[in-house]
Length: 282
Image (cartoon, rainbow, N blue to C red; front, side):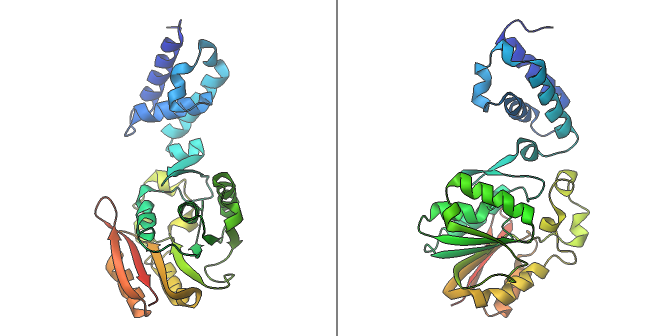
């Protein structure tokens, strides 16, 4: 049936999307997101589209997005952004897609005193560092990553959020190019073990950079590096917070205690799973 009104055109387009994405968890929501993206509006703007807005070109874009989603590409990678904490972050195939679980680290960091200087190891999109800089307007920070393309994404996010003047982004293999001391070190390092990689969904495995997912082996090597090097880059009573895999809490708490850190704690995410280890130098 050919649409005679904007409302009919919207209904037809959304029905098309829901049928195409019927095997997804929330086909109605995803169809609305992708249609809005194809039309260049937000979701609330869909009801304001005119009949002329449902052009062949727009519908071709929409069908292309549906095809990509049906093939397993995450919605965030199609849209090019992910909402995290209180902000919208650009994401691409070059950065880890920020997950709600990582907000556990932000919440834990905000429980303590405001730091003057923050270091984010493996910054990726910059979602951790930049969210904290937005919360603490007097703070400055350094975000490091081994991927030059990831740093480009982080730089654009810093500009968009208005914190670029307070965020230095540098290419570094963990502490290799890091100078000075920080009041807080944060990190969401690759932590999925080699064995667990085989259990990942195709959406993660095929669309997030492998170097941001796994270090191989037991998944703990990045934490060993961080625990060994962080003390030389933290101020007295400085804090360190790292995101962890939900099975890794006891092992990682032991690693940080053995390295001489104090006040080692494990925080759980909204599902009650171990998600963050935090500690202090004093």
